[in-house]
Length: 160
Image (cartoon, rainbow, N blue to C red; front, side, top):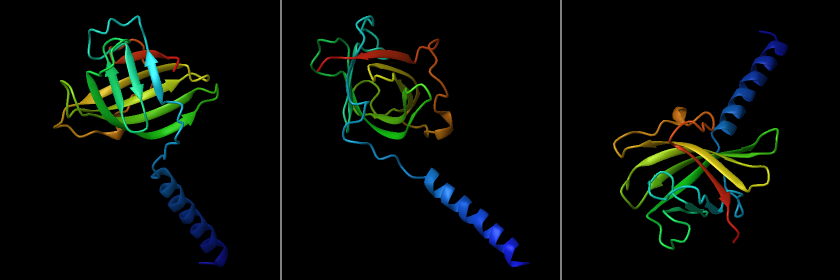
C-alpha cells in the first residue's frame, strides 16, 4: 500500500472516530437555559394529569401544578437535557429525558421534544411515557411537535 493511500485511509478512520466521540458527548446545560422558568396555559382545565395549567422548570427538577394559583405541585420529577439546537428560524429545541419522582405516576420515565419560540416565550412539546418496567429507547423520541395527539402541550412564559 503506498503512503498516499495509507494517509487517506488513516484520515478517514480518524474522522469517523472523532465524529463518533462528538456524537456521544452529553449536553452540559447552562445556568440560564432558556427552558428554565414558569410556563402556564390558563386554557387548560388543570383537571387532567397530562395538561396542567402550570409547569416550573429549573436546572434540577420540574414541577406540574393543576392550577396556575397552586403553590404545591401534584407531580415533581427530574430531567436531563440530552440535546439542544436552534433551527433556521431561531427556535430553540430540546430533547429531554424525565423521571417522575412523586404523584400517581411515580417511577415512570419519559422523553420530550420541546420547541421554544425564537423569543423563548412560547413552550410547546410532544412526549412519550414509559412504565417503570420498560426501558427508555432513544430511538423513540418524538420526531416532531404533533398538535393532534393527547401528549401535546403548549404553554407561555409567565412573568417572574
